[in-house]
Length: 347
Image 1 (spheres, rainbow, N blue to C red):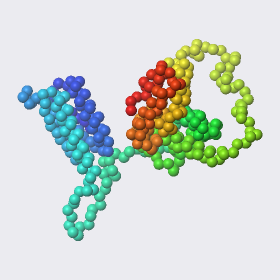
Image 2: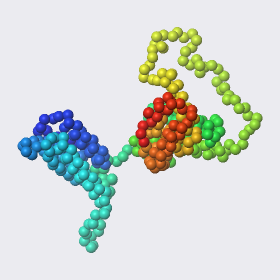
Image 3: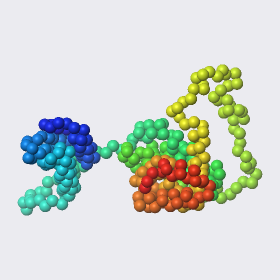
Image 4: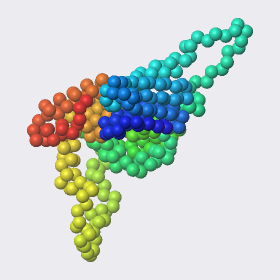
């Protein structure tokens, strides 16, 4: 957006703040237009002490032009009044564009109707960018650990609840299924801003599909199979992958890295998540799922609604029910409860 503001009064922080608010509001409301085709010109001046400060704005869009002028005793008050008037005009203008197909047009009886092009298909419209395969690869490379932990927690909960048998589904299978569905041609690609919720939605659907498939195929159990987990490595290499017995320990190895969590913090976080998982076993699956996505994964109400195909009001109700379940749960002591609920945010 091209902005040009003329100041004929003293520029104060309050005036700059109101102008910045105006620009941010216009950017949010004019996202459908190309930024280079939007022009905003403003003038702030003081003609006389009687009239006070006079503020005028002229907004030029590809589909029309709007102008406002307001006066007040102070510059911030005049800017606020002009901004309110300008936003009202923008709202009416956008409503008029949306209902353009309802306009009555006078035509001659024998005149042929002229073809109309929707505004969304014109050059002035800002087309939303959809997710590409490169976007999916970049997100997976940067945030695979988060998605991996979420899938692992979901599998552990479903195993404890008896929904799936132990070790019947691995997290690697779920991650592979999510990436395959995301990169495949069958799934409808969302906009780029909704990439993360979309991948979590694919993860939940993959878990449900593989669990249902496993229930159909896993009705019989072979009694002669061993219940022990096989040691495929048959060595102590995982324990010696960081320091070999003959390796010297230098100062570089003992310097604390403040960018990452300490082992105590990691253990505390894992313990709290385990307690939450145990406390939510008596809750409804939908309530638990909504609470985990909001409190632990950090998604908003609208994003959770898109992930789970539910309404925002139902998500808020589920989160409130899960919190009530946590407060009534015996495994969570008072000191843990206060620490847990202070970071979950408000619904």
